[in-house]
Each structure stands twice: as C-alpha cells, then as structure tokens.
Length: 136
Image (cartoon, rainbow, N blue to C red; front, side, top):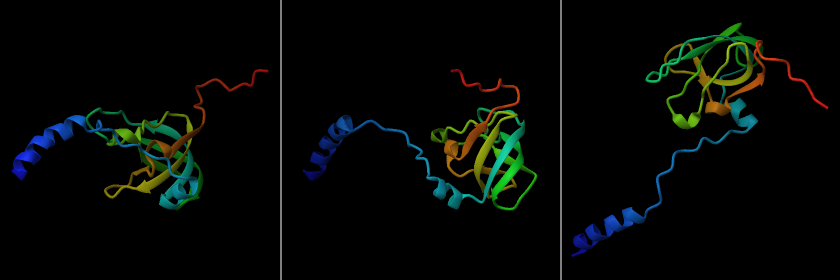
C-alpha cells in the first residue's frame, strides 16, 4: 500500500517541481580573489591559440606589465576557455590589457582564472581600437 501510494505521488511531484536552473557563478570580492590566486598580474595579451568548440585548450600568451602576487615572470600562458558554461570565460583579445587573478592548473604550466569570467578583467583597449574620447 505504502509503495503504491509513493509510486502514484512521485509523477505528480515531478510534474509540479520547479524547472531546473543552471548554476550561477558568483563574483568573488577583491580580497577573496587575491587570496584564491597563486598569481595576480596586469598584462597585455600578445598571442592567442585558436578556439575549438569540442576542446578546451585555447590559451593566450600574456606579457606581464606588473606582478601583484606570485613570482615575477616576463610572460605567462593562460587558458582562455572554460569547460563550465556558467564561467562565461571568453578571454582574451590580442593587444588588450587585463588584470588576471590566476591559479596553477594541476597538469602543465598554464594558468587559469580563479573566478571564471570575473577573474580576468579587461582594463585597457587593444592597440587597434580608437582612443576613448570624452564628448562634452
């Protein structure tokens, strides 16, 4: 009797259940990003490998302008894609300058964002973009 009641109630419960929602990537605070990072740099993207829709190995080469955390290095290799759609990481434009909150990836020497799209923030235009002018 109890099993039959449960079997009858389950389809009704599933029918009225809330829709499935994707995960939401919450932006960490600045101190939390600093704490979670192995390396924090300000750098300009100098080269990029092509993206592949079925692979997540696109990288960018970043020339370091300033090191805020970690050992200073002239260049870094950074993953520019994420396997997690909610990360929304679609980084980076060659010639543009970013502040990057990065962590070491277990396999290899490349680095990855500590906070998805919130861990790599564009702070300067690419060299091929027009200058920003204030219109009064």
